[in-house]
Length: 421
Image (tube, rainbow, N blue to C red; front, side):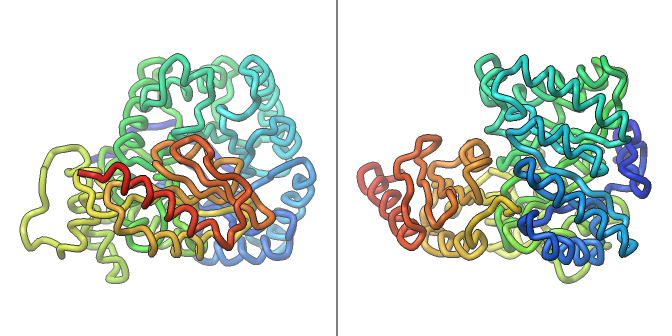
């Protein structure tokens, strides 16, 4: 299917997103931004691996200088990959960092706790970005939409699209079009529905579409994370929706890039373009979109192994054979061994069929972005963990040396009281 037309957005001097340009593959640093040497080294590796856009977290005002120095060091080495500043909960940091990067990502749901103040500060950001030639990504995540939206529309795909449209209308009213937008969720059905709604709404209301950044957030790691990402991203790319993608894996960010490139190439060059390194991706892209859209109900017998069939069916949310994991990829805000913890929790809990378990890197995004989870393990920093039952903290400040045991005990105790059918 042909790509749905979107307007072109230039990111720095080396990248165009939308407007018929090839799908760009991006990633995000996992280093601490204050560690400039480590972040520059990781960016160097990511650029060498083929990243076309690199996002770096900017937790507060003190990190504005660090990301500026990191970008200058990369440019001095001839590395021109555009840098995106990732902002949460600090509109003032967004305003301060915009002149120092090619793009700023903000989440309107947490841009400012007061909605009217958020709108005023966003209008200021548009002016700063116009003056400095900086693009913006409006990045909404399911579960962190903000009370203003959820009280009116609930926590639904419709709410996600509606929330994005409010901020996009502000961009249009201010004649600012250097905008990319994303509506990510860990649930592939919610994520794909939200993007379809937004794509249609933009055309209906504006007569054009802003480019879309497509991804399955907190997909997890390993084979299951790759399959889940392929099913969600591939469903939309197959419908012509998507101009840039990120595969969010709970692994080193270098691992995300070849997976993203393989998914993009499947649609740009054909299914046979996928290298033998990723046989699970081809199977997921061959069968997952049809299952997710309910065009088909099963994978033909013998088409894939029993294990791959189970994984693809679960990623498409058609049949669950093990626990479902929601795990963030980690970034500079992560204060513990996220990858090791995720693997340990997965090993201890995979048998808990029908349970959704989130492993989140920090208290900034964790509680909001694990909206689908029955249980959550959220790092607080300083060796402490909060354990959630749905969106309610049930144990706080637990030492990480005992947190996994406490989490497993809570889940098993609940299942003894109320066993699944």
